[in-house]
Length: 145
Ligand code: DHK
Image 1 (tube, rainbow, N blue to C red):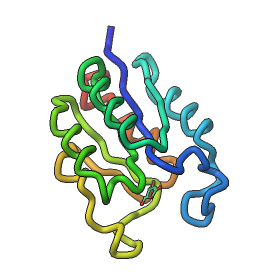
Image 2: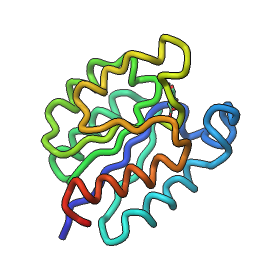
Image 3: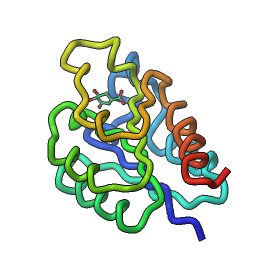
Image 4: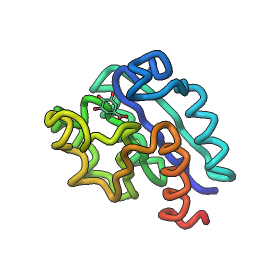
């Protein structure tokens, strides 16, 4: 039995679809979750979102102990949280950092990720479609396809 892919989402992503649609699109987080589960096929998925930094850290610990890989959109915590970076450092599974927008085309405050140095790969700018792309890549990284 393959351990789950943990897909973790940070602050304000609960409002996806209504939040700055010109940047993040109109796809809702529930629709993103469905896209991920379809892309995962026979690999189980844990899909979560929180606005609480400590909770995201605890979920990273859980994914480290019980999962097969982490796909994480830390949202604004990407650029501020050394605690999330430190939690990810403990993970020996593949880590894909995911952003809906191309953060490198945005304002300078979005250009220095604290997560990228500890991630296996980064996907940014594909919109909500980046999530199923990340799941497909994670299936390959964990040997599921
Ligand atoms: C999502 C957010 O909420 C922003 O704070 C990030 C990221 C970008 C995204 O593009 O998915 O800066």
